[in-house]
Length: 81
Image (cartoon, rainbow, N blue to C red; front, side, top):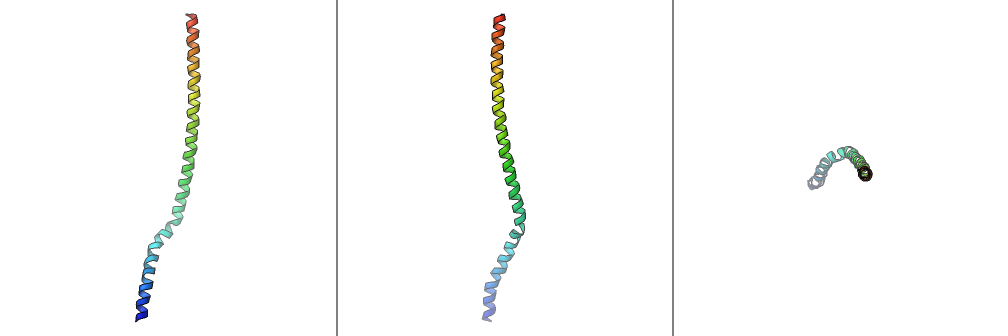
């Protein structure tokens, strides 16, 4: 009788633990795929951020060229008077 009580005290928590862990273990492949997808999106976001910064710098360069062209045009118009 004592053996059955000891077995129940030892085995019952193990069974409960196994039942609790089973859903988590069954979802591990999905979680791994989600982590890979998240990493891929983070990489894409970083590439987009770098592209946006390059585009911003290019736009600033074009703005400077436009300012220079407007100044030259103003000088030309002033000379023509």
